[in-house]
Length: 508
Image 1 (spheres, rainbow, N blue to C red):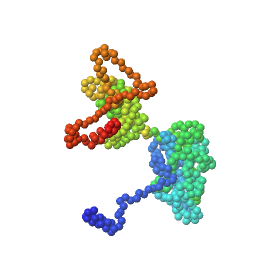
Image 2 (tube, one colour):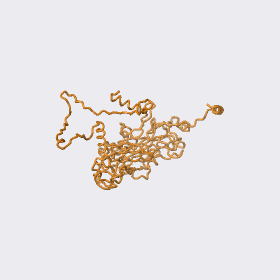
Image 3 (cartoon, helix red, strand yellow):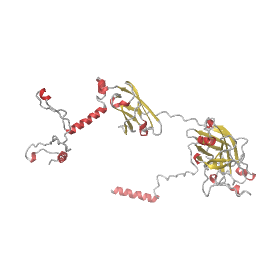
Image 4 (cartoon, rainbow, N blue to C red):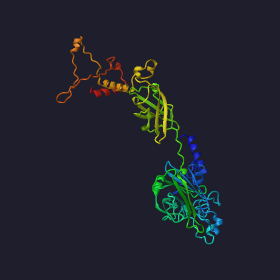
């Protein structure tokens, strides 16, 4: 290390000691732990009016507040403090997605009056926290035992009930039951058979049906106050209860409930059932995405000329882009004019930052008319997105025989398969060292007719093959002089190659 570098290092270390430890450039990342109740759906945000817009029709059914709804009454001693119960229900919103057979429900609640927005679901004393009690409530005479258990625990209950049969009594209930969980466990969201308890009263939870329990959103937040959840395989549940398949004209009845046995001085809420057809709640099918149409080239090395009369190799190059990864193509779905590829591979072309997928087809498998025509390449990604691209090609059956002039120079004189076969035969013939013809030295046609050729295998009766002498290959380097200083010089590489050859040939 130079003297200057050592001095610079000493000064830097001295500056750090004077100023304290060197500050960390990147602060630690604060990670929010997912609440055990937040089995979040992409559409659930805890804001029912936003997640279930009334303008979506069909797709969202709004069951409004009315004179038959029983809103909780609050004792006069704490009515000025609580104002609104966290179990009150002011409306229901329903949406059904036929693509995944899911019924989504959002429970609306009235404005808090103690803070902006609706009251938080399960916030018994409406203090902006569903797990604590305002001291002003517990200090009021007679309300010392007022409790607000978090996460709809204890005897707190809230949810909806469904009447599929139109009898006025529910068959299914979904939400949180009145039964406290065992120990310190959190109370689970349930879908269960309903046990009616009489008119204008919340049903009890019977046999749990976990196969129909979907996503749940319940957060202790002023900005995300509402309870939202979903019921999966809803058409199966409907048929299980009614014995008939669900259709768009099927009529359902839905009501809601909420309350607690630990919020002293506050009664329970009951939202009587209202009817609607499932067709009005069904979201319209999503718009079909147009097929991906990447750039393709077909036989560019032969100027887009193909020959469907021969076993030529036809190559289709599919180019990737910043928004399309060619490796997502499912090769089993690739087709060119009805033909399946015989092989495929991926590589990057020069001056291209995105990979290119090459599919190779047998020309005889292509269903194309002769002449200038359009060849369409189709496939789909592994996620199901369709791919369609087309190119004009010139189909010339028996092209090597029919092409003349300039056109003949644009294509190969033989098919790719024939060229491969010829290359293989040539390599076999060359390895044997035998000539393609033999000069017998016959002086006349009569002498040539006397020649007989035996094509039988030369194998003896004992099974031993008759040895056949093959020409011995000889490599020599001529010396320009007998004097060692004037002999031809052999490079080290050539010398090693010759030595290896001689050792394989068994020569010294």
